[in-house]
Image (cartoon, helix red, strand yellow):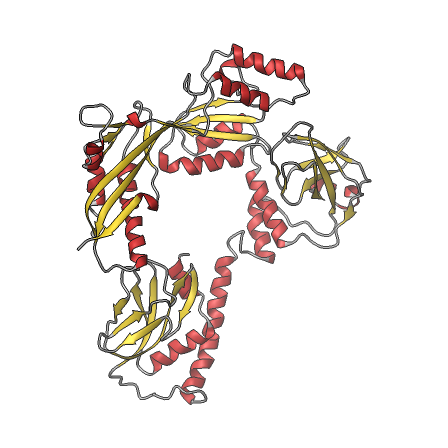
Length: 526
């Protein structure tokens, strides 16, 4: 459901009555007009005597605009004019106008309170409002985030999740940080816990985060289906086993006995448990990370982890490095999926072979645009450049003249030129990209300082490693990627007139645009 659809389905009662009255007296109801921040004046399709109301979408929500405050009717232009300082629709959405025709043949004219016309319209509008509410509720009942009660039970049943009733025991389990471990540790919902011999099993009922400097945290738990009823009631100190150990957590325990719940599982808790069940399918292993990457259509992968062979061993305890080959526009989603798949408390560093470049552009701007219109032009410039770069494949350079041609498609601009172009390349673990000192410092920081044996083992592994260093999330400045007409580093004059190209390292590298609105300078032309 988009913003325009919401504006039609979520209809307040008074707006429905106004629409009915406008139609009864021969007016025009809900005439759709696309809104663009570049303009403040919008002509109506038919001659109008007055505008009764304007509705639309503001901040992605249904909104009724106020006459003479947000908009005014210009009889001379037969147009709706948006007022400076008033509320306006979201850019590139549709607003709807109710207005009276100049010549109406309707015999009904009295729309005042108490009239027969208004009374009948209000009665009909009440019934129509109920229909809208039922349609909207039926739509919302199909999604896990908006379904309620029985509808939510039916939605989560797809995952085999059933709402827990009052006969499931609940309590608090305390998680303790391991000595010498720093950083934030996430404890997800749905983590499986049990007593020493497994007589009773529990799962975390809500997610928790153990912050830096915090030694312990209490997490609410609820008995599993296998420990329903009295089987879930255990004594203090009985819950001590984690089915999947958490990196950075040394032990767990419950300081108080568990008790039978006082109420059924709430809708918010059931939603989170269902989402945790979905996320928890095949997580926390290198194989799971590789499978998640494969599901995202990543073509090739290298993985470094602390327990891998020497040539593929991560120097940092609790860290996994992955080198993926994927289109730049899909990299954020791939990285997000891999980070969601990693084990709690384990850092996942995802890298790819990218050459980033930041062009700084100056151009003349058509005069007379609103402030919002100028901001939109800047966004259109960046979108035009991004569209060109997205069309490049691995090994393809980004050419300056093609970049200027892309900017030239923005109608409000003229005489575009580049003031500068800055380039970086990803640190993908090439030999020499990370110095030995950096690697040793990272290794020492990941080993408990009091454990001399572990420190000696970690340093020996680094010094004896023969493979390449692991990738990181850093970027290395590389102005040599911006080449001029002769193949050497581009001069300022070549950059300004677009006689350059941003070249990848080889055929496996991608060129990526890294640009923000501050990189575009627009000056109004004469």
